[in-house]
Structures are given as structure tokens and as C-alpha cells.
Image (cartoon, rainbow, N blue to C red; front, side, top):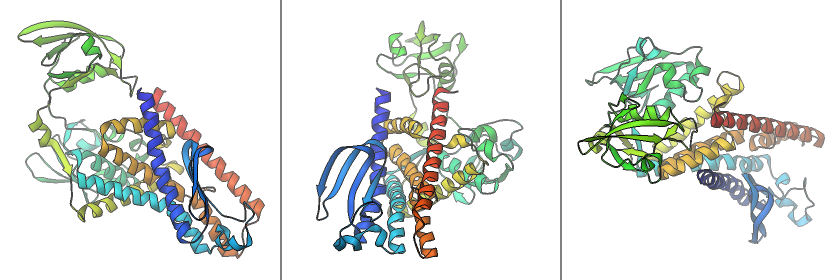
Length: 454
């Protein structure tokens, strides 16, 4: 069921973003009086179609949900009636053609702005960036970062959550390998630090590597090992655990807090554990056969929820919520930051300065789409905004068959005063297809590595 849910979430998510991208091309083409023959979501066999409007444009859904296209009237691909030649794409000025080509990526960026603005208007929940454990001798330790310090500014940008802090840190690493941080200690006194990570960009930008490499963990409030609820038909339910039970030991190890308990469960997928619990002043022993986590088969799953102190949650929770026009300003800034970060990541990935493991393909996106969809509206919007920005940036790359490559062809034509020879264009397109296939295979390889932990 989780696999099916992820596939459905992926198809819906990609379908929406492709529809937005292609609608950008479609709308500007119509505004430039270029005839639109087909607007397709997906590639391959047409599953559903409908013709409508004065131009009888065909709107369709196709079988392969990994993209889409807008087919414009063009003398290079079909015979065009004399009275419609002025509406053919190839007969438009260079300015109009470039505007039509740019409209797709611009629509993706606009979608991200609207998504972020909606999120900031509703309220984006996050965790206050307070530092927890510090590894002695680490970069963080050497720069006087200590447990209890709260990060308030990274690289000149104010941050309120861990997510914002980490994104800004990665941006600093990609910029000049100097992470400039402003903090306040547990007494409210300001602290300043510059973490010099020269030569470690590739290491620090690998997935989930930043905090361990810098030598600190987020602060996690102590949660008592008291069961709030039991997931029906999960391992704990089958073993007879009940709400209000207090977990005292796991495999004869005393349990002091919920996080310790979780760490021990996660380490033992598909294995038996012995629990000692306290129930109404009586101690009981329970043998539990753990399942594997559906999102990661290398992690154990028991099917319990902890009792959370709501006052404690509010103390460490940060809600980013703004009224208009502040929400719009924040949305534009967030989109701009993600565009710059994406460009830096891709540029340094191509040059080999950062790990290619950061590149995800359709399998990874599908898996993440299912995960975020379960987390709710805000998480899904945030994920869609990031993917939309990535889609917009990738389409601007000067690779043949994507928008950026087509813009290059138009500019070359404008420069030399005539279209490139057809043979040259074919070679150009073949190169682009080869480059995209390589990227897709490499991204798929990364997905499989992550999923199967090879």
C-alpha cells in the first residue's frame, strides 16, 4: 500500500508541476498568436484527449508521467497552410520565441513563489535551531559552539528553524567554504563564529553529512518513555502493549528517555527485543518481534507513539507565519535562495566539487513524494516548491531538447542571420538526448543506492 501511495503521490505531484511548466509555454504562445496544436501532460501513448477552442487545440493525458510538451505549429515539422504561416513558431521573431521558451521555467519559479507565500500565510512549523550534543575536538567545538547555543543568523540571513539554518549553511559552503554564524548562548549572550571548511565541500554536501561532519546534533528535549498510543496490528499491539505503559528496560538496558528507546528499536529491524514495562505499579515482561520501517528496511519499527508534553513542544517550536505583503517578500526571497542554491549545487556537481549522490531520479522523488504527502499540506507544498525550482533551473541549462538548449539555437540563429543547418541541429539534439539519458541513469543509480543501502 505504501508503494502504491508513493506512486500515486508521484504521478499527481509531477503532473501538477509539468502542467504548470507547459502552461507557461502555452499561455505565452497564445499571447504571441502562435497556434498551439497539442497540450500534453505525459509522453507516449495518449490515454485521453479533447479538442476545443477556435484552433481546435488537443488537450491530452499521456501514458508516461515523466514530463509533457506543448506542440506548436512549425514549418520544420509539418506542412503549414499559407494563411497560417504567420502563426508558425519558426516564423516568429527571436524575441517572441525566446519569451515562449522562457515561459515554462518562469512558470515553475512563479509556482514556487505562490507555494511559499501560501505556506507563510498559513504558518510553517519548524524546530528552533538549538544545538544539542557537541563532539569534542570537532569544527563546531573548536569554534566555541556549545550545547544550548541557539543559531539566529547564518551568512547574514536570520533563521528561525533548523531547516532554514541548514539550507543557509550549505549555501555558505558552496559560496566560499566559510560558514558565518551568529548565535546566542543559553543566557542570551551573543556569540559569533566562522567555521572554515576549506577543501571539505564534497564531504559536507553529501546527503545527511553536514551536522555529523561539523560535529553537533540538534537539541532534542527529553521525552519520558511513556506510551501515548499503540498503532493497531503493529508489533507492539501484537505483543500486548497498552497506552500508559512505562518502558523501563530493553534487553536489560535501563531506558531513561524515549529517544534512547527509539535508537534501540531502530537498530534491530525484524528482530526480537525483550521489554520490561511498568503498568499500574506492576512490572511486566514482553517479547516483541519488530517489523522493518516501510521507508527504510534497515530500521526497526515497533508501532508506538510517545506521550508529548505540549508545553515543551511549544517552547521549542517555531512557526513562520506572516501577513501580506511580508509573506510575498519572504516567498520571493526563499525562491531566490533556492534557485541560487540549486545552480551552485548543479554547477559544482558537474565540476566534481560536490558529491553526485545529491542527484535524485524518479524513484527517489516518488519515495519522497509519498513520505511528504503523509506529513500534510505544508510539507507537500514545500517539497513541490523545491522540485518546481529544480525543474525550472534544469530546463534553463543549455542542453539540447530542453528550453535552455532551444534558446541557444535561437540566439545562434539571430547571431549568424540564418538557422543552423539541419544536420548540425540533429547532432545537437542527439547530444542533448545522450546527456539527459546519462543524467537519468545516474540519478536512478543514486536512488537504488539509497533505497537498498548498497
